[in-house]
Image (cartoon, rainbow, N blue to C red):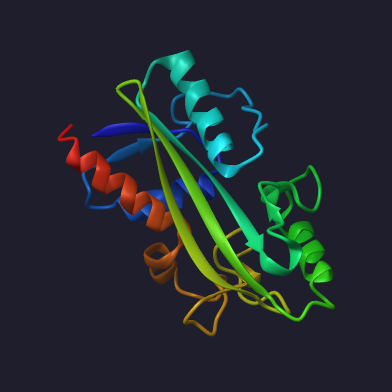
Amino acid sequence: MEIIFATSNQNKVNEVNEILSNTGITIFSLSDIGYTDEIEETGKTLEENSEIKASTLFKERAVNVFSEDTGLEVDALNGAPGVYTARYGGPEKNADQNMNKLLTALQDKDTRKARFRTSICLILNEKIHFFEGVLNGSISHDKLGSGGFGYDPIFVPEGYDKTLGQLDAAIKSKISHRARAVEKLVAFLRSQKI
């Protein structure tokens, strides 16, 4: 099966391709299909943003498509950065700026509990479906590791003593919030016998 993944983020494409290996599902990113327009994420929730991206592409190209939006939700910051995760440190969407701002905001906080949450919106045969994946953990005091992307060097998943930036990519692709959401997506697509 072939399906469009409505993202231009090559890191996300690589991660999802890793998860989808051996499933028989092939994804094409926005750059793969020559789509260069910026899709504004104006939603107030992760679900709204994932639906905006998928719906935009579906309306313009009439293709089966899925999109995702991911947020880092920190308990001590009342769920922030949440829907603003990518641009928390500024409109440049710079990972170091984002992490620096978050570490500064947590300096005097007692709890560092956090979770990554991914919402996937699938539009298949003109019907909308949602899938969610959550990875619980905590925010480290320092940036550790150079693997992954985004906030990975400061996020320690529950049950581990290393950040996502330090963990092997194969481990991350099994436990990540995105992997958990994609697994639900794959199970659903297989149940449709497409």
